[in-house]
Length: 597
Image (tube, rainbow, N blue to C red; front, side):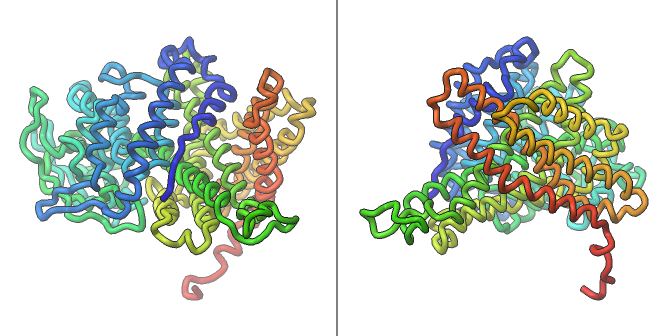
């Protein structure tokens, strides 16, 4: 059966040596987050992930969720008990606002915790994960009364939350929604309609579920300009905070899915359910994106998480499985065959996953740090850059990390050969669970369009040019460093190709919008490769520094540098192909008439 071991050494290296978290100790939230404290938190989180959640992963996959005739949903065996342990230990409060009972830790720490949870049990982790999106939306857009009513219970985990966006006829095109909201004259609304694909939409793990629902108020403008966001609790909340009567929202069906069987993905039917406007009327789209952006970073981590856990199990199997002999002579002369880790193609799949995992994690943490600085830095320029980076990098993290996470999960399944296709080995679950990450919270094709259509041109391209300038500054600061030379040269190459692709889009997208659409996927991949190349340069710098400061005998740093060199040799060259494809334009893509397909 699969196992999981939290990458605590990786977290320590990134947070302490690469990002140097202690530099920010003078800022709010960071003041109480010394590296000693952070490491203790993550060690405890690792125990919970490894000992409580991971053993439930296969159980949840096999048992799934059960729906009763009245719409009540029972989660897989052990899920409810694990959730109680999670709440009792205070994990839901980790990065939440102390004003509502939170611990106020930086979000970057919560991100590391989230990766461990998703690697150990992705389906279980979606229950609290969706709650955090609801918490963020109410925290940012809710009234003071709504915050006092809902946030303390979301912070303790007593209540959970959901995001209700998709309808049978309206997925990405949310402006087509039909769910309606009828004002009642007392500040409340009656919500009627159907939502589908609602993760954690109904379950038995919390006493109340706070649904965040987009709907159109009667008479509101058509399309996205008429969308409003509503708080619709499963149970109404009395003035004293106690739970009242059941609201008019019922689970009509649990979706039968390819993966994440342990999560109750529901069809929710709203029949004149009582709801409360969250934020301004007809301004629900911006409130919705508060939830979506939180979720998209989390989904990117889910892609990485399945790559990481699949890689760990692929390594264990490759070291244990005896098949064939090494091409350069026996490596296990006393055995009937050599372990398959001696074979170059097995090494290729493992190294691709390892070099991706380590850089992708650095990229996600680096971005999350900017998100924290956006909230707490006193420097307006720092906050502006952080805001730009969060907008620019979110679609890249969501799409690139999930696309590649799925590929590496499948490659690690491939290492098992036929045994990887057998359910008892557990590798297929990682592949099946990883597949949804490329689809939900905005399909990856939409992320690519968002990147080239919205994020690049925003503020005259200020965000991407700031990223180029940061890379240039790093290169200039280290161009004479002989040890870093391969990493600097790789970064220069990647950045030049990304800049070339950016300029091509700026010159060709407006004359033919299909050029932007046809180029978007390759541009996003090119951006992802460039970002990960930058992360490898940052990590190489930290590894070389550590080796000079007493770490020369630590094999961790040698392995880190060897892994980075693999990325430069085997992944970075893909950038050239992506640039060539994006610059070919839309002609070849759009040439066939629809009837020719």
